[in-house]
Image (spheres, rainbow, N blue to C red):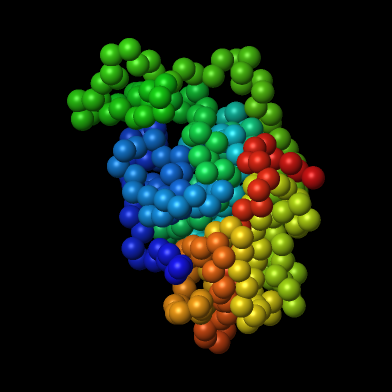
Length: 316
């Protein structure tokens, strides 16, 4: 057994992953599916690691002023900022609230609300994502206006969840209907949460978490975490001050995602170095350890499944 490592520089983007791929303002975004099938609606999406983990790992890369359209999920959607400056917004029209996050910051967006995000920095930026469940809740639920706008630019989402591009001469197959728009009655089930309910519960700043990760890793998301939730996985922040050189193993596959500095991952029979943007999947039962490999600031997020059912936010 050896870890599988997906290097940042080897990530394979998909520019046709979602229904807003032709919509002005969203047509330059890139979607990356690193672990698990993710929620891409395109057959062009490359999946780097297919081994089930109990959650999915993905990423979004966007140039300045590019946004991801309003959508919702049935399971957890957690982001941390790898690079750039990002505005996250939510609500039926994206006006219920917003928050700006920077490198290392993390947001656990409550399920059942419409959300979007935009790169408001001055350079290409990347956010890394953890989605609950092996099937990530079965896909994306789009705000009605997103589907309507997409149709004006040639993209139609079928009721099967597959995209068809009229600019390529594609049409819905016989007997397959377009994805229906949410009715007004259904839309009433998507609340307009306040900034206090979203930011106060689900956002944590990098430097605050670093302060808490002194001596032992900071449990960022979990039943007893800084963000109290049971999304089917836990996330810890490990820093130089809390890295443990003692070999250990998990009974489920675990994932290491550096955000600052370089790290040495060692296991029985080998070792390798991880840098920000790299994603390492460590097999269940493999004894391993991870410590900073160079001087300077070092931090990484560690993700492991818990066995809790991936579903609506617990918000304990």
